[in-house]
Each structure stands twice: as structure tokens, then as C-alpha cells.
Image (tube, rainbow, N blue to C red):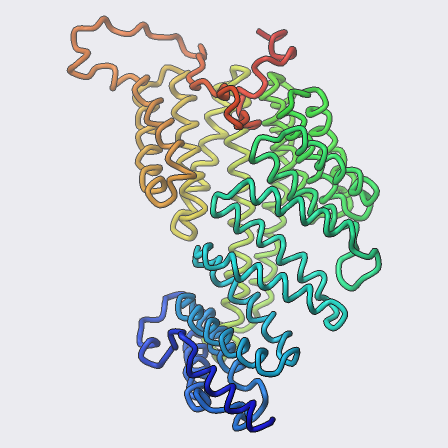
Length: 535
């Protein structure tokens, strides 16, 4: 490298205003539960030693032209393994600054490394929720990827991926109209791209982009346009149905939701029914798809219930539970087979073998837990279907099974189990209330509210409405009726067991609000002719 370039680079690096990571920052407690955190910490410290040796020195003195930024990348990756994402961000930022100066001094030489760093930094910033910082990084990542088309094999695919994340960041920032524009631009850009190129075939990429565009349009209330985009995606996946049944089923599910949003309920119902039919054949020959079919049946039951077809919904719910039981049994059998394959006691193994066995065991337990929790969702929905047709004892039994399973998983995975348990308890309180077992209903509803309150504090956007709904339901039960302020009121008329009465607040959308009814709720079909016939 020329002496003039070396001086230019050294001056530029010394002028970079980036907070540098140092060994003092690594003096923090390692989070529990990580796999071999000592190895990751040693790697971070070892590569940081090399970084400190090369800082403020010209590239000509490094062992390789990109030794410093590569060492910074190793530091960042080790810190990511330690879940110290805030410190990894500092390493990525310094790596980016070094690559930018190298690229400015020797144009075109370090563009690929710069692009990789932008991708890693964007992902890191999104994980930290620093979307304002991530936005310009994603834009630069996309521009640089496009500039590499013709020199880097997968540059066009990487540019499309960067465009997707750019749209997602705009959504996270609440800039929904800009997100729609970005998603529309993605569709237009892909249409103009050559049919033959490296990476995912063009048709698939366009279908993914159309699905994303439909979602963004739906979010801003442009339901007809969202339906048009979804229908085009379905036409593509229909041609690939034999090879991609799950993706075709997913596109049909989206189409059904879009049809419902514009009031075309019978067509929506047909689309939801097609989802199940598309998956039935493949699930018979591929056991890996049986869980997917069970989920589709569960969703189909919810849609049928929304249309007021409660007996058809019950049949779908019963089949969903039966299918999920098969999946649970298969996962339990796989777990037992794995344990039997361990022919040596753990204490006789060295550390790597013990660590690998622990990983395999934890993975198998997590798979069992995942499918059991999905079974619980289907059981809770089935209990609602049974309640609607007046089979209260069976509804209570299905709910009790779900509650028992979910309680058993709270210690192992509270984040997944507790929200489901709260929902099941609330459902239980409704069934008990219908059976005039008011004391038990109140206990279940109170426990549900107690569980939802901390969840609402941690994630108010997701859980606060649920907590308010459940708090609103509770005063209808027996004990709250007899508060001191109501002491002189006439006693409430006691309903006989089995008499149901809706307690759902109105979900009618405000006219012109840009919002739609939730298709998973009964309100979205209250004016449908099928419901009027059943009244």
C-alpha cells in the first residue's frame, strides 16, 4: 500500500468518533444458562487483545489487509454468544467505522466486508429495539448490496432481504404509510429483476413480497388492495401446491382473512376450508405435517364458530385435539427413544459429551413441551366449542386437562406457559359461571387477572386489553355482587345451570377508523346472513 494512503487512513481512523470497547467493559456477570460461556468470554478477550494491538496503526502493519475489522467481528460474535448485545453493538460500530475508512481509501476493495458488517449491525440494533439507529443502516445495507450486483453472487437476494427489513423497521417505528410504500417498492423491484439469478427463484421471492405487501396494506385499512395482493400470491402457490402444501395453505389462510375484511364471508369460509383440505393428503404420508394440519383444524374451528356454525366448529375442534394428541405421543416416544440410546451414565462422560447429551435432552424436552402447549390451545378452544352447544361437563373436563398441562410447564417455560394458563383460567371461569358454580368461577377469574397484571406491565400492547377484559368479566360473578356499596340492592336473579348469556363487549369497528374487526372474534360476522339465520 502506498505511503500516502497509509497516512490518509491513519488520520481518518484517529478522527473516528466511536465509543471503543475495552477490557473494563467485560467485567460483568455472565448470564446463567449459557452453553460454555467461559469459552465465549476467552474468545472475546483474546480477539480484543489483538484489536488493541492494531488500533491506530496503519493497515500495512497488520498481518492481513482486513485483520482489524475481522478481529472486531470476532469480538462482536463472542459477545452476542454471551447475550451482551449492547457491547456487541459497540464492536460492530467500530468495525463499521474501520471498514468505511478502508473503503474510502481503497474504493471497491472492502465493499463486501462493509456489507456484511452492515447486515450484522442492523440485526443487532433491531434485537436491541434501537430502530431509529437501524433505519439508516438498513438503507445503506440495501444500497451497497445493489452496488455489488454483478460482482457478488447473491447480492440481489441480499438487497431484497435488506428491503424487507427496511419495511419491518418502518413498521416498528409506527411509520405505517412509509412501510406500505417500501413494501410496494419491493414488489415493483422484484418484478423488474431478471428471472434467472442466483438464490431463491424469482417467483418465490415475488410471492413472499406480495404477502408482506398485503399485510402492510391491511394494517393501514386498504383492505381491497390487500385482497388483490393476497390473491396474486395464492395464484402462485396454487401452482406449487404439490411441492409446497404448507405455503399454499398459509396463502389461503391469508386470503380468507382478507376476504372476511371486505365482507365476502362465504368466500372466506371456503378459503379456510381449503386450508384443511390442502394439508390432509400430505399429512397422511408425512408425519411432520400432522401438527400443521392440527393447527389448521384448530383455526378452522375458530372461524366456523365466528360464522355461528357451532356444531361444525365442534367437529373441527375435536379433530384438532385428536391430531395434536398423536403429535404429542410421537414426540414423547422420540424423547424416550433418545434416553434409551444413552447407554453410559452421565458421570462417566467427559465434559464435551456431557454437554452434548444435555443439549440433546433439553432439545427433546423443549419439543415435547411445545407440542403439549399447542394441544392446550386446542383443548381450550374445544372447551369453548363444547360450551356453545351446552355440553358443559365435557367443556370443563377439556379445560381442566389444559390447565393441568400448563401448570406443569410453568417452571420450565413461564414465558410460554403463563399467558396460556391465564387464558385457560379465564375460559374456565366462564364455563363455571354458566354452570352456576359462582365461587369456583370467581376463584378462576381472580387467578387469571393476577396472572395477566404482570404480563400487561411487561408487554402492555399485547396483554393490557386482555387484563381489562378479564377484570370487567369478574364483577358479574357472585361475590363482587355483594359489595358494601350494593348492600341494599336486590339480590341478583340466579340463572339455572346451562343457561348462557354473552358477556363479550361490542367489537364493532368505528366507522372510518381504518381498523377492522378481529376475524378470530364473533363480532366480525355479526351481520352475516348465516348468523342471522341462527338467531
